[in-house]
Amino acid sequence: MICQQSAMFIKRCLYSDSPVVKHVAHYGVFYGRMASCVGRNLFTRRERYNVSVNGILHSGFNEHSVKSLCERRTPPVYYSSGLATLELLMIRRGILYVPNISADDINVLLSAVCRPTNCQ
Image (cartoon, rainbow, N blue to C red; front, side):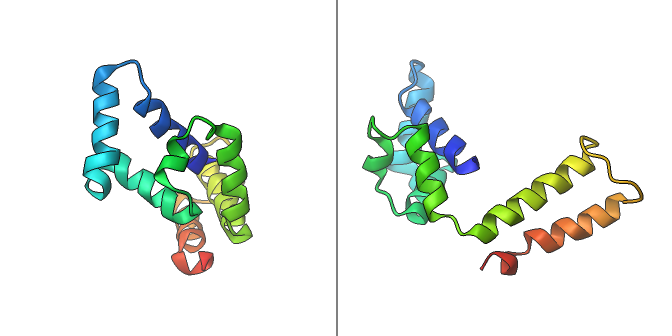
């Protein structure tokens, strides 16, 4: 879901009606690249999902195609780690309730779930 939102946000910025937003997005993608947050985000998506920048910017590249691409190219372990992280963050914020769990316990669990070795 994050990759879908990120890709569509960049695309909306590139085609924005606001000249300032459009200029900043174009600079980030076409000139700043890895030195720009927008460019780095787009190029990371491009490398991870093996799609060209032109493919991402193509008019046929929409929310459905992004979701499909992300689902095909994301290993299942990332889904389970992501869901566990989401649940832990919801507990931390009080959205979900789990009795007898401390903030320290949640931080330990988050560290374990988010450890890069869990996703390789």
